[in-house]
Image (tube, rainbow, N blue to C red; front, top):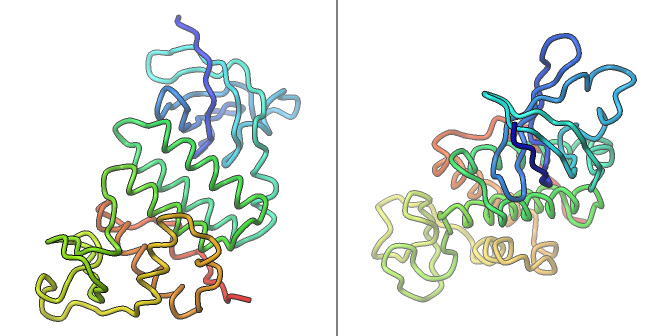
Amino acid sequence: MPVYRDEAVVLRTHKLGEADRILTLLTRRHGKVRAVAKGVRRTGSKFGARLEPFMVADLQLYEGRSLDVVTQAESLGSYGAAITQDYAAYAAANAMVEAADRVTEAEGSLQQYLLLVGALRSLARGEHGPTLTLDSYLLRSLALAGWAPSFQDCARCGRPGEHEAVVVQLGGIVCAECAPPGSPRIDRGTVALLGALLAGDWGFAEAAAKRDRDQASGIVAAYTQWHLERGLRSLPHVPRETPA
């Protein structure tokens, strides 16, 4: 059977039999892959700890009829241990890998892989708040999937300006003329924060007020749910942060 090698993030794991485990992987070059790691749950397994959720590894696999089989695993990013030490980071990481699993349902992409690896690495190192990191990741991941939101010009007609109505079904911020009756209005600080999260302007994002962070998180959650057609099960478990 054909053998191949690739880098991968472990998204999910399921027990199989007494000692095996089924892995859902997002790989660098082969998109999303489902594979079995045989004997990985035995105490003497050589690479069991390298194939836990949130871990990044260099894998050798061979193609099977329904599931590929992992034959070698070398650790590239041991992020799981650090992430699981902090509940907020752990909850955010779960939401990230769940979203990655969903947006790559048909096929993966190198950009999605690199984005997820960078977000998990940032969580493990505590570079930014877990909620901000998650919200930024979700916006960028959706943008890569073809659902880029607009937080500056009107998402419907393209009119420039400082708009205050947000309609996730229309793609983000809309002008007063395009906004349906009763559309929610948000503060300009929240609009600016959403743009910063999408662009990766961490200095601005970390200086944002709690009210703007809370509003932004709600909009990101609604936007994610709309495009993925159902909400992320992990998202309600992510605690909200209080800026220092």
